[in-house]
Image (cartoon, rainbow, N blue to C red; front, side):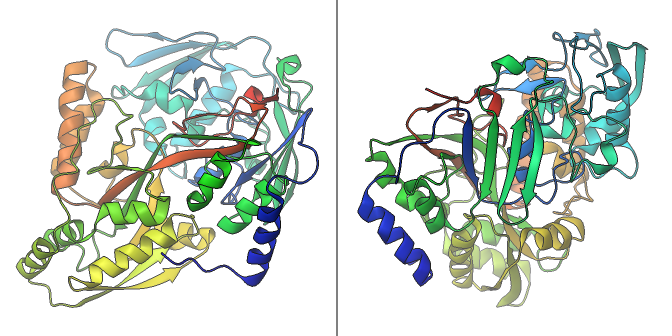
Length: 498
C-alpha cells in the first residue's frame, strides 16, 4: 500500500537514515522521553474512556487497590495484601497499605476509597466501567485502613477491574480538577502539559518508596505521524516508543545495534464497530455480509505490517476461556453478496466510515472500504480528531461504522449494555452475561464465557478483525519496559538506564 508523507517529513527521514544511528550521545541518567501516538483528552481515567490517559497517569500519578503487571499478574498495590473474600463471593475486605499519601499531602484512608467508588458508580458517572462500581451495594469503613465492599451480585473479575485505570483512587478535594491537575498516590506529579506536543512528569519526593524510583523526569511526546516517529527515534529525540506504529519501518531498528525491539501482545481488539440500531446495520444479514466481505489478513497487512492475531469475537487468546471463532466468517465475497440479497435491503448501500486518528485505523479503513465496495456496500471515509470521535461516535452514537481497537481486558460486559455506542440490545446475550458475571464456579464461568463469545459472533455485532501487537522500539540500555501490554500503561517506576 502506498503511504504518502509530506516533503518535510521525507527530507527529515532521509537525513537521519543517512546518519544510520541517533545523533549525539545516548540519553542516560535519570530522565527519559517516551513517544505516544495519541494525546489524552484529559488526565483523569475515571471520567473519560481514552486509553491514552492510562499511558500517562496509570501507576505514575494514580494508583488503585490492585496492580496488573506487565506479564498480566495481579498483585496488591494500595491494598496491603490480597483481600478476604466471603464464601458467597459478594463481600471483599481490604486492608490499606500503611504510610501512603497523596501528592497534595493528604493521607490515604478508607474514606477516599469509599468516595471514589461511590463517585464511579453514581448516576452521573462517566467512568467507562461504571457498571463495576454500580454493582457495589454498600461500602463499610470500620476504620481508616479497612474497606469492605458489599456487592449486589458476584463479579469474578472484580480484582482485575480494580487494577485497571478506571479503578484508581482519588483524593476528594482535588478530584474535580484531576483532569488538568491530577493528584494521586503514585511516584510522579504533573510538571507541565504543552497541548499537542508533550506532557512532562517529575518524581515526587514524598512518595512512600521514592528512593526506589530511578527516573526523575519523564516526558511523553505526542507523535501521531508514523514517519515522524521513525525520525524522532533515529535522531535520538525520544528514548523509546511503546506501541510503536510505523511497523513497516521496524526492520531497520531490528538491524540497528543501537536499538532494542520487542514484539508482544495486547488486549486491543481491533474491530469495525457497527451502529446496531441504525438501518441498514440493524439487519443481521447485512452485518453478516460485512463479516464475510472483509479479508482480515489484508487488514492486518495494511494496518500492522502483517503483525497481529486474527480474532472472531470480542476476546483475545490472552483471556481466560478464549475460544477460536475465526472460522465462523471466512473471507467469502460470494457469501457476502448472498447474505446482502437475503437481507432484503436495496443495494448498493451508502454509509459513512468514521476514522479516528489511531495509526492503524486509516490503513485498515482503506482496506475495509475497498472490500465492502466489491459486494455492494459503499463507504464514505470521514477522518476525525479524537475529541470529535469521542463526542460524536462514543457519546452521541451518531455514526454508521467506525474502526477502533478496544484495549480493555475481559470487557465482554460492554455488550450487555444496550446504551453502549454499539447499541447492541440482545436479551439473549444479556442473560448469558448475567450468568457469566454472577457465577463463582470456574466451570460455569468457562461455560458462559464461551457462550458469550459465540453469541457475539453469531449476531455479527461488529466485524472482529485482529489483536493489536505491542511493539516497542527503545534505545539500548533502557530497562524495565513492558514486553506485553495487558493494559495500556507505561510503568515509569520500573524504568532505569543500565
